[in-house]
Structures are given as C-alpha cells and as structure tokens.
Length: 170
Image (cartoon, rainbow, N blue to C red; front, side, top):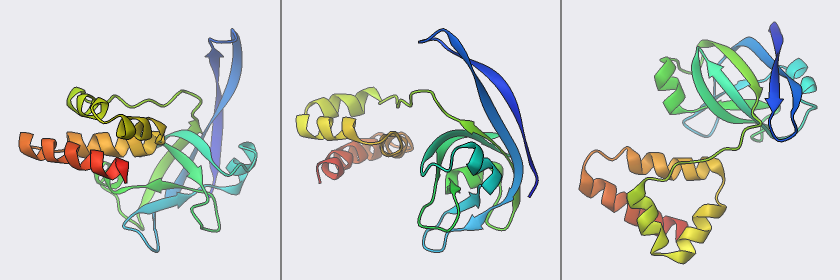
C-alpha cells in the first residue's frame, strides 16, 4: 500500500517550543479479528519505522473522515494494527473486507473522560470502587461511561451504574 505523510507544527505550551508532528495517510482493508467481533487494519511497516517500532502508540485517527482516538498495538497478531470496533464500523458504514481511507498522527494530548454526575456521585459513595475506577485506563473508563450513557430509560441507567460499581470492585 502507498502512503504519504505531511508535517505540521504543534506548539508544546509547557516548554514553549514547536515540535514537528507527522500525519500519515493511507488506504487499508478492514480485517476481521479471528476471535472477536471486531476488526482492525494493519499499519504499514514504513509508518511503524517512523514511530520507532514501539509496541504501543497512542494515535488520533480518521477512518473515512470519522475521528477516533486509539492505540497502535500488536494484539497478538503478526503486524502492528489499530482496532476498528463496531461503533466505528457502524459510523462509517464499513465492514471487514471493505477499503477505508486512514489518517493517523501520534496523540500527545492527555486523555480524559467526563464522568456523568450521577455515576460520579455513586462512585464517591464507594471509595474502593472510586479508587479502582480512577486507576483504570482511559479506554476502560470510556467504555463504562459510554455503556451508562447509552441507557435509554432512567431505570436502565440506574441499574447500569449499580452494575458498574460491582464490576469495578470485582
């Protein structure tokens, strides 16, 4: 696959210096994960060399224009890849076997999750769960928050918050 990259200046406000960031663009085929109901795309070796062949790289990506923050990882597969989960595939209306346009750049921004007020209030009532939740990765925190936010009925949301506390404590 052919790819190209462009550079853009990114000012680091902590140090007052500019750093050149590379943005890579290429086309890829969504591959079905062999064990999960998920897909992924392989990252070209040339791009991995630019990233220094590190094992995990936080990236900002665009898949057919849809913005996504994720990781380039090995996932036990032969090549470095980035996951294309069901939500992304639904948003871009693509499935395994389909070709997509990809744009990625390293994500150096801090990743934060906005915790809904009702979930936060419940978490603070359970100090052990609150502490464990705060130690979770960005992705796991985001998954809990999205799962709770997707509830359509108030009682479903309340049940999901209660279940989340139990799951976090396990």
